[in-house]
Length: 161
Image (cartoon, rainbow, N blue to C red; front, side):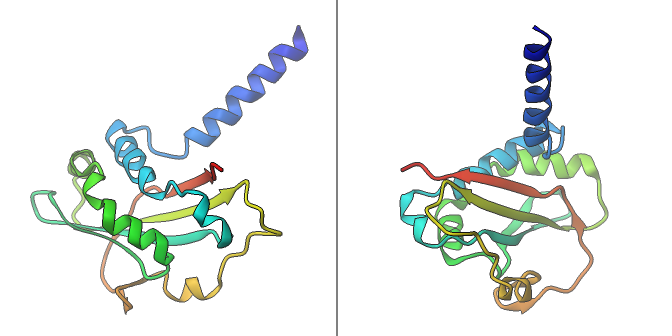
């Protein structure tokens, strides 16, 4: 019985660690969950085997309305395509509520985004080091300015065959 309780306790801690990486703010969680729908890849993705690292840039006006949402140039082409195609499905209203509560003086926000793919028939997963050269570039241009970093999105995606 003690072993069962120990296993249950450890399982709860592991689950909370996986879910707990996103803010406890419910609006930020809603935004993060809506964004995760964009990067649910299908089996056609299986021949790439490269995790993605990039930044999500959010620009808001003085009333905290999102004016632009974009990915840095380090995002892979499939993610960019899915992002552009499904951008309208992202929960912008929850994001705006969250940003308004922060009452930050800056109007540009960056969210580090990373994801790795599990259950891949790949010998190993490698990060393309040239992606780091484009990490702070948007549309190929170096980003300059004052920003606020928000909590990162770290997704571990299981490919469904």
